[in-house]
Length: 161
Image 1 (cartoon, one colour):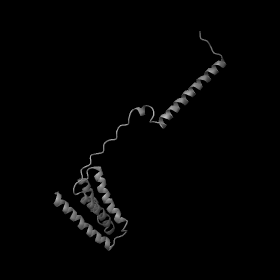
Image 2 (cartoon, one colour):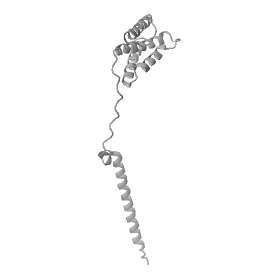
Image 3 (tube, one colour):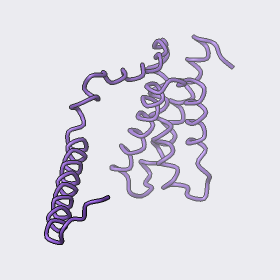
Image 4 (cartoon, helix red, strand yellow):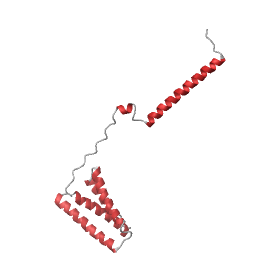
């Protein structure tokens, strides 16, 4: 035999259940928000974060690096100057720079150094020359001569193809 509840007691019981469910929902929502807002507390704080990966080993500096960095800067300068003085010619200096980076600068820090030198040469002249002038043409000749000279020096002193 089951006891039946009167209508007022059923309402009170249902109201109590709703309040408990509402309370439980509010508590769970609050805990969830706390976990999102303060993730360093709780279980995450007990386990230390994994150490960052070690940077790739940097190649030792080569004795000819300063010369190659200057050559990179010259290639950037020539790339800009030929783009304003002979826009019909395809830019061979960018491809030469890419070949130099691929050959000499395998590690990321060296790549950034070589690319930075190229960009310095390019931007340095871009801020000076807006159009081709006689002086810009003279610079092209001087930079080509200096680039050939550096290439020969490095090849003669340190070998290479």
